[in-house]
View 1 (cartoon, protein in one colour):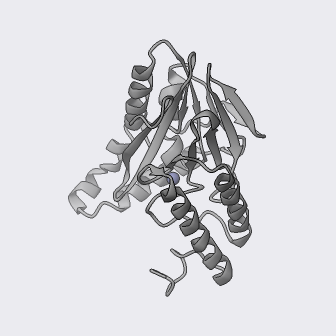
View 2 (spheres, helix red, strand yellow):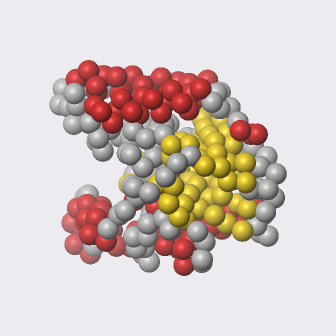
Length: 255
Ligand SMILES: [Zn+2]
């Protein structure tokens, strides 16, 4: 969907229902910056198709917002086309980790017949682990032609999380630093990481975005962004106080 003059979101890409994952892209006059590649090659083909259709003459560049497979699974498709993929220098995923992800997906299939067929492999057709080939170690900016995209380090959910800010359009892509509707996933860290996450939330809040695309859930606008920031902040503060994440802390569910 088109969000602003130059910013687009590709929402609802397949992941593990009811959790979908989002992608997006920013269209400059000469360069289109794709933000995240989905969980698999099938998603990457969709994102690539939309990004090319928006301005066919542009070169493409990709940036990953973090290391989890739902955001980088389509990297291989883009790299096979010779397109550079940027991402935090800490994104170093292995084939073994990816095989464990596939196994976890397969184990979650409720129907034994489908589980025994190994249908998770279909979801990951033609998908392999490809880490970013361009490493981000500090904040930077991409000049896309008539439009600038600022790469902000916003760690907390993982140490590798970045956000992409388009000041001219007041549009923000947050990856999983912010979440829309769902409970945030705190399980990749502990209280030290969650305090860092609170700092990152303050950072993105200070930008006062008009529109925000989170890693998961509906696109947010205006007051809805502040509501999401406040919700994630409350979950983090409760987790810090209790010393455990809401999904790991029995008895805290629904609080
Ligand atoms: Zn995610």
